Image (cartoon, rainbow over all chains, first blue to last red; front, side):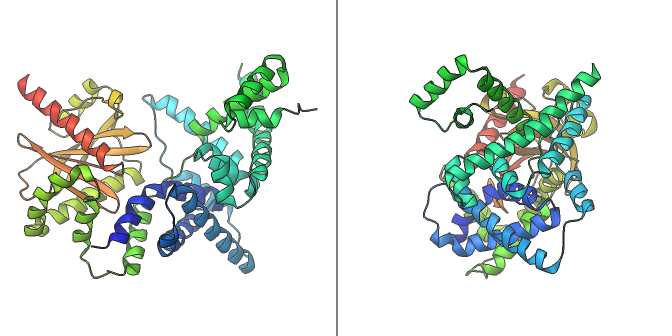
Length: 181
Length: 254
């Protein structure tokens, strides 16, 4: 029996969705996100003996983020940037879990696509704190661990991200609602 | 000019304040309309993001790639995968007894059950990765059960266990070993549980197995074989199988 592998699978694999969610929101590309997460899981596996218990999710997500920064740096040096088609592909193959009414779910996924697009336009440092806070439900301290900045910086970036969304998204929705009426 | 308490209102929303600070913010909100409006907007925004923004999930191909990559790294790479999976399953303490019984089967008959487990894991991954998770969307067992009876020619027990944390979301038809299987789909938190039922006499099935991080529970009732698979915690999937076994007994009495 490989006890180390067993412990790793039991502790780390349940957070694979969190890892891919963060990676896709960071890279905005399915293929790049897969590469980042695979590399991150291998690094996590090699570093697993150094993990000293506690909540493994921030530890794992910090590795995902580091892998992304490494690969993003490499791509930048090679002059590769994500193409718009790749962004479109990202939002196209997502599991959207529909409620009982197909009509309601169609409306929701349409709204969801718009919101995805708005969040995707936020600059990286704001996008990542927003995703970690709202979709991963991490605390300020955990976000600080993942992004390797002080808690005060986490708070100001989160406030900035929300201010941008209040303007771009809530302004948007209210405008459309009044238009529809 | 934003109120100088705005940052504290955000920390309040995020549950980052101690009791005394939270109380102070609540008192401030009573007389600061600007902060009340801010809080309302932040709550709307949070609701929209959590309900509408995409939460990306790992697909089957990625899980497989990672499992292979880890295999190539493992110091004990010579261990046959299915043996390792049995022991991965042994991690759940609650299942140890059931497992001890099934281990004998597993060691005697690995060839018979292993392809089926692969089949089921692939069917589960396909259902999650593709759009084909559900053919009939309903949380009403009186809709799902007759639909399965017509389309899969099987009438497995179907119930909504929302109170116990397993919400019925629908059903579909799938194929296992070339026969039609009725699949009932449940949602447990962020996890999907597929419950397969098919007519068969598969001998030598384990009670429990783990494959690529997915837990698989088998049981049998009448001439149907049942299999629940998910990436939930071991105890959760065992709980759902217990609930469904209880249903089978009720159905039989009716």
